[in-house]
Image 1: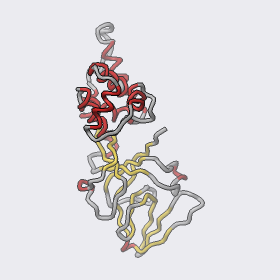
Image 2 (image 1 turned 45 degrees about the vertical axis):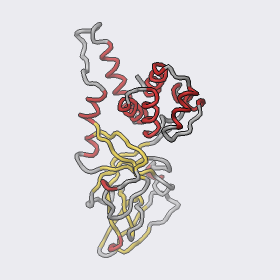
Image 3 (image 1 turned 180 degrees about the horizontal axis):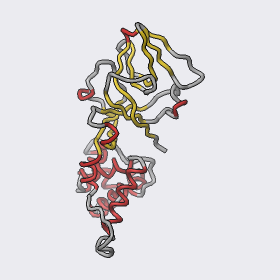
Image 4 (image 1 turned 180 degrees about the vertical axis):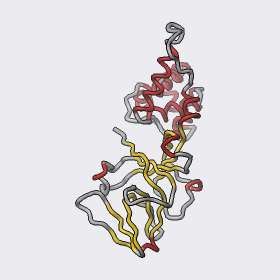
Length: 241
């Protein structure tokens, strides 16, 4: 069951009208029109509701909050991950009819626990800032565990067009692992002079570092190596359509 189908089911089973749900959401601090709730349950919005609004919707309708949050994250996941969940559901439905077929017994929750890690999407990150102490988290992404390989991971939302030569455009989400050692071919998250981090390639030699954008219209930036802090390495790029 998709996020939208699950929400529609919760709303139906609650016995509440959309107007009543809208009114009760105000008690949770959300002013949401019945029109938006209708669009949400019918899958006519670009994305699911935020985690906070989903918690409120589950509380109002009596639905399972964890199932709704999980369904929302799956809905926002890359297509290959969503296809995996669809295949799991289809194979389970066919189990009785095709007893000899190869059936995947994993539930979505089991698959998430065994194969995916939950990674925070940070609005920005400053040099020296511990990832696990950042309070402002915009969202969460499910990332295949094989991508991060046990390292501490975080996601950043790209601003600007400095890396369009690598097909990284504004609005993309880059999955990063925290590490100090990188090569000249790596795309890295780097902070200069303690400021908010940026995404570039970097080449350091002696006492200078060169920050290299992949946009041909932009020039490399040369900075003192003592002012540079490498925070992590980009391991995956995600785009919302």
